Image 1 (cartoon, helix red, strand yellow):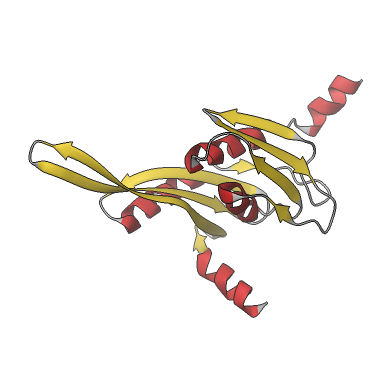
Image 2 (cartoon, rainbow, N blue to C red):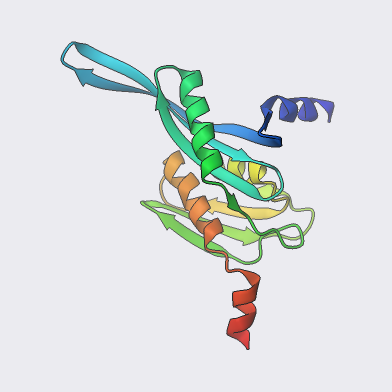
Length: 167
């Protein structure tokens, strides 16, 4: 158990008085052909969350890996969304599509934990949802799957509008 806490402490950074956990979703070397030869840059996709329902995903390129990761973290913090956590899980089943990527998120009973694969698991862990089942249905593209998750989270209806529609 102590190993897990040490690992989480390594990924946590205090930024602007708040503590965020960041996970690198994808790191790729991108080559562009110029007149003088090939120019290499690095693309980083990073998920940033506070383990309490806030999550953001950022993608950026830089001349080296650390620069790309820092820019991606900055972009993720600018685009954070709130995940509604109700009784330790999400409020209802949601399907989302972004490009060719399709994902499915289902609420799960207490004690289930996070049952999801690939990038979806990383993002759910960073966001702090304790019990949820997720499935990647379409593409294997990590960035599009991450954006599909953000789109799914944004599609949750606020509580007030749900009650208004029932009345």
